[in-house]
Structures are given as structure tokens and as C-alpha cells.
Length: 64
Image (cartoon, rainbow, N blue to C red; front, side):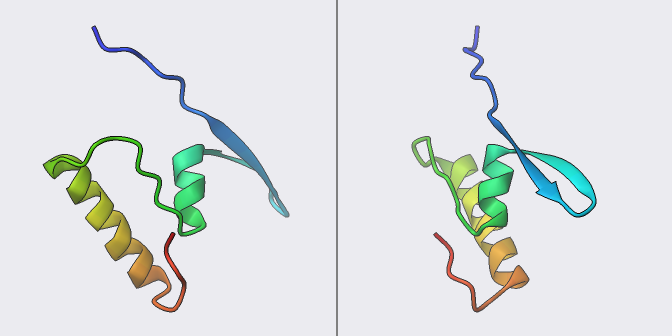
């Protein structure tokens, strides 16, 4: 049986109302990649995909 860790959420106020993000999606929106597990092939693929996505969104913005 796998331990289930609750997913943290954040609520962002916008001119159009509230928007709820899971914390990791919100960090990615700010060009922050959060790594919390040892790197294996699957994790490496996810991180590479996030890096490619962020680079394509804004090539001049730093990725943390």
C-alpha cells in the first residue's frame, strides 16, 4: 500500500476571480522546478519536459 501525501493547493486572486493551483503547478508558473525525489529515468523525463516547456515560454527568463 502506498502512502498518500496530501497535495498542497494555493489560491490566486485575479481580476477574473479566484484560481486554485496545486503548489507544484504554481511554482512551475513562476519558472521554479521543484524536485523532491531521487532522479530516475521517469523523473528525468519529467524534468526535461518542464525545462523545454519553460524555455519555449520565455527563453530570456531564468529557471530556478
